[in-house]
Image (tube, rainbow, N blue to C red; front, side, top):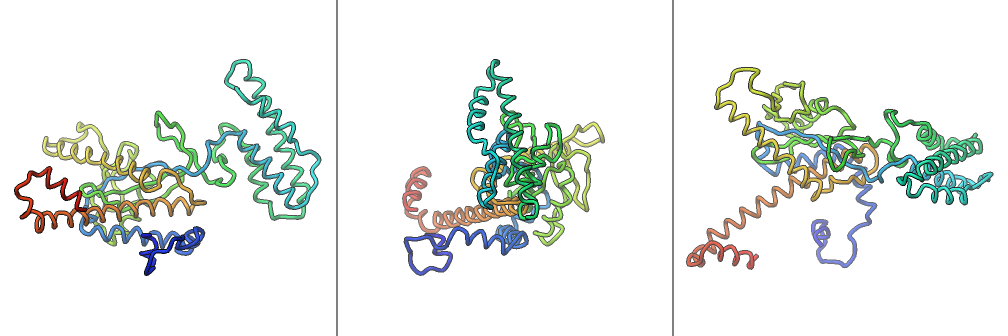
Length: 363
């Protein structure tokens, strides 16, 4: 209903206003620059609240829409994909391995039982061998056809990668996914990309949201601050509070980077120390904002494809947060106006709890 109203419909229609794929085409047309303009507008409508010279910066992980990657899963997907290509191109295969794979899946069950360790490992190696055979056979049959060349190269990279290798492939349909460890007790590894967020300290407006791969936190500061200054259209940021993950960087452009550290390094008055402590405690508010972005604004799992999809999702999430903040602020001002100008003369005889209850019933 709301979507139809904002699209200009004169009356409600009991059908979808557009096809779901139209939104995909729209995102592709406007691209990263268009989504950045949406984020810029969300900052503008928050007015003077976005002009705070003190900001907080932190990074989080935006998880991709993939299953938890294991070697066996990837090998099985390679086998299924090779079978699809062979069927589509009308190629004959020497053996389908369906009965063997079914038996191997039985051997891989209950692998944590002490008696099943060896049997499960042997089954894993056999599945990998079968996947390699099918890839090589498909490569021989498609010798003159280069349509599937990139896909076959991806399969061979998956089959050749080892446990300690860098730049490993964790998903066949999203090969750019990174394995990121943020030191969480409940979630040791997350598979996606890193996101840097810049938030005003006093007002809580997101003035920067940048997507990265898996860089060191300190190396993301330059690009993140450049984006924030571009969106604000002025060099209004003076100081940035960060956590100890950014250690080693004290200044970028004209922005002073401050991270918690002992006060023994240089002499400071008690007033200066308490002021810094208060600002560092205020920096922790960004953690709650990241939680709201993930739970309420779809930063928790990214369904958009590719590297550009990572960038679009984080900026759209930040824009939605800013728009919602502005709407809540306007709603509270509207409520306050009605409370003071209209309802107060009639409800002066009641206590505050009764007034609040009656206002909620009215709205």
